Length: 289
Image 1 (cartoon, helix red, strand yellow):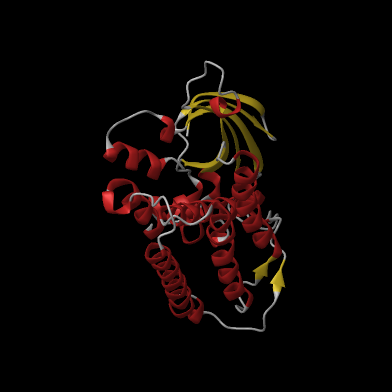
Image 2 (cartoon, one colour):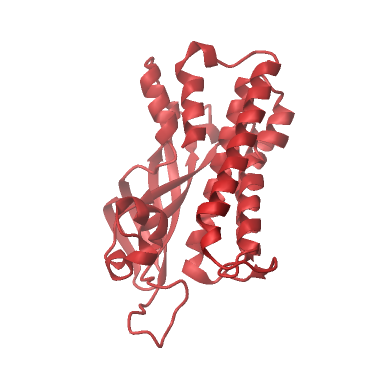
């Protein structure tokens, strides 16, 4: 949320307009701020969260089969957007594109890897190679597009709707709406949203129109299927085809709207969608979110 705030300031205040050349004061301010926030967050996590659980020697676990990999999709998206904002604040300071990719785009991977180290010293959890790979994938998607197209033609997006499963295991899947957006994987969908105009700039497609491929899962009360437990369901995967909007490509002279569109552009808009799931086959949704 702090990173989003920095991004908003960069678009709404003339003081924060992009520098055409390297502004060392701005660059240093970005580096110091990100470093302080990262260290402060890790220290707080260590004292407020991990301190409540037993410690152990550093170790890895294999949790790749849990939650139909929806938790890994969360890592991909977080790494992508932390890196994206990291690039944008360095761009604001006039830092070269090369250094934006080296020091800004990798911010998400670096920070999440540090969190993974804390997991590794916790007896209750453990570092996950799957999480590390997911973090690298999000950073790779960001950097790869910059190297190939010098722009982000394919965005990662997120949507969520409440499910009945959270009421059955609120301590794990969330006790309220905000917790459920993070914990209830049954209601989460992750999207690859591709901007059509970016791939055909000579065509007549609206600049804001995207086509989106989504992935989700349902029927999950536990990370893994547990046949001995009466609450176990029959989890299945969901795949979606839908349309979407790139809000940043909507023309407007309003600084407020530009800021708003940029801030919420990670959310997939509700739209008709064709679903294929591994339990019931094809389903059409007049409006899916």
